Image (cartoon, rainbow, N blue to C red; front, side, top):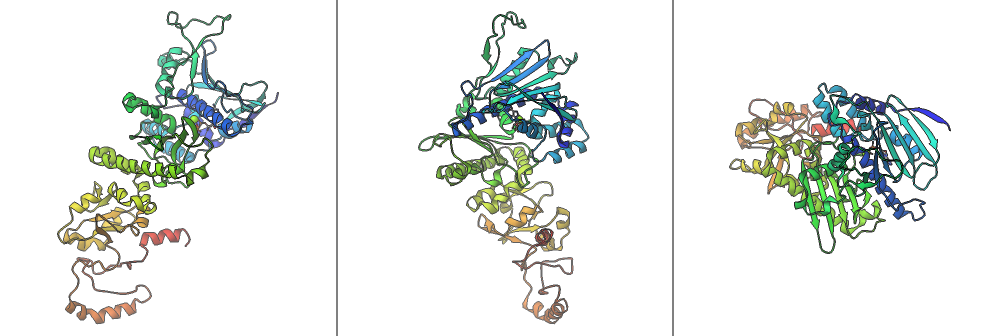
Length: 560
Ligand code: ADP
Ligand code: MG
């Protein structure tokens, strides 16, 4: 049998180093990661066997088993799911395909304090590699369902791993952790204790659909050795209830949080939990979460939608883009629909009327939840807007149907209060007598904007101006006519005259103005008298339909 030694891809190597010298205090979660991978593998096998009737796979008793060997100090998590081929193992375990990894590693390097790194690790979630927090060697044996060739992968996490072909590997995957020596001070981390392991499974993986089995413990002799004669009796440790199908009064907040961590691969609690249950002609249940932090890839091109689709408790797909609009791509969760075919494809979903209806309801529900947050929990809302506001504002462009609701939950920096963003509703309530417009100015940063001569007259009049500095602001302001019947007006564009110049003033300056217009012909369209300035002698304004300076810069950067 030939054994090959291969190198981890460099990002994988760095991530492993982080795990080996782990600074993450909650090491228990390695088990959640392994059980979650096993559960995903079982989901995938079940789905594949529905789709491919010829698949030669055993789907009779899909389950997860956790075995402990106290003598050898090993812990094994085994599943009889989809399994991996040799190439799968090299591609999936030896490399990290997750987007945002490089960015994550860079931030880790920059963050000096341990607490900051903890946050980052939690946010990123490191999956399989978290095994190396507790193990100094990991062995994985796998066989892809429907094939005969097994593969054995082994590594101490230090730069290389070995890979070899194996005979008669059972279907699915077994991951064996060779646990680090027990630390006297850290006896809490004794993962050879069945009680401890059972407790972790209950805590983190209770809702998993598949049975997680362990050797039954005799309460009178807790750690009795199994006698060789009779096979040890197994028992299911988790309750296996689909959380979204249970009445919310029966589910604790902790259970929701653990479920969120399971599906999102986030190690932190969500900011908000959203539940929906629809009965009648088209029945579905949804359990959605707003994370507490934006993922590192929120603004990357291939950033995924976070909602999973189930049909009658059967997992169908991750990242179901048909269920959530792009601007709410950070929302995670599960939708379980009762009347869809298990064979639905992404393409069919996009066309499906009922799916579109679900999506519309989910979107409205999320917006309504944020609106409630705004009035009932200002701190929570502040976090929400800080993390996701920039994405949400994309909806002002993409989704005219919900534009008013999106404006309702948006906040903007303003001249009113340098520290605190304002909602449009609050802006409107502060509008001065005679003020008809909601004024705004766009630019690169608050500092450049505050020194802008465009603001002078508005300041003098006591008119509040919204300060819009996100690139996306440049895009939506032109397509959003106004809010609550008040038109939006840029202070830097067109003829915004607060007190128009009188006839005499106009005629007095006619000659000067036309001389200036001719002289500056190559640079400006027109020179006109303005009341928008109080201390500066002049300023440059764009025409109503012109690009703003920032947009101009953006287009130029894109080579247009
Ligand atoms: P994630 O689960 O977030 O994708 P992991 O590091 O936990 O990241 O796992 C990486 C990949 O390895 C998984 O996406 C999956 O394709 C594969 N994998 C891990 N464990 C198993 C398993 N028990 N059975 C089949 N595939 C697995
Ligand atoms: Mg995983």
